[in-house]
Image (tube, rainbow, N blue to C red; front, side, top):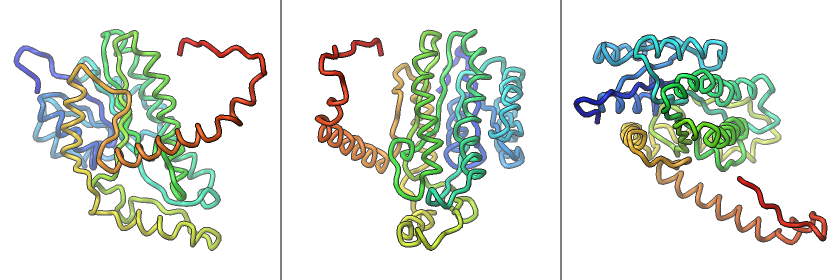
Length: 291
């Protein structure tokens, strides 16, 4: 909570009209902070604007329109004078095999999950560097650390976002700027709802391969374990604290699945060690690198 005499934090949150973004916006406002919601339809957050006229603002923005990223940052600075937290949360799911997802659709997802967030980060960093502080929260997914048939197009953007953000964390740390990569499991949002979760046109070739995945993804709506309000409270507490991890698996399913993925990866690495190390020159000296 913001205490008397302290300056409330200013948040920019994309995709704040519903789901995890909405839960996070409400938690930040409840903590006494200020929120700029970058959303496609500002009317979707009109209730928050009415309830918090002095601490909430909405700006119409499509994250995929990277040319408008500086406008989003400028709007927050003009309204509240600083940016303490940038949350790249906007996103959507798609189910389809690699052969079923066309290039235009794949590029659109990459714009939403990688290029849009990257543009906003670039636009926000000068102000954060000048004030000597800031936190960038990248909302990835458990699908940003492990993947499975049918979600490759979605995971591609999240994997890319995580790699880009891990490098970013080291680059901006000397300026007092932190990076948090959040890897949620399934939360009770509209992510899996009909008309929201996308499905590539199914082909006979992959009908049997993806049948269970399609059924599972569509059937998860309203049954997800994660509570967006609890997630919002956890993230606000973390951002307000001094100890911030680089990655946070959010939700029991994410913890279990990501953990299992790490164990499988380590077992595979060790199992093929003999083949891997055989690629070096016989007299090669082990590398000692700073990172």
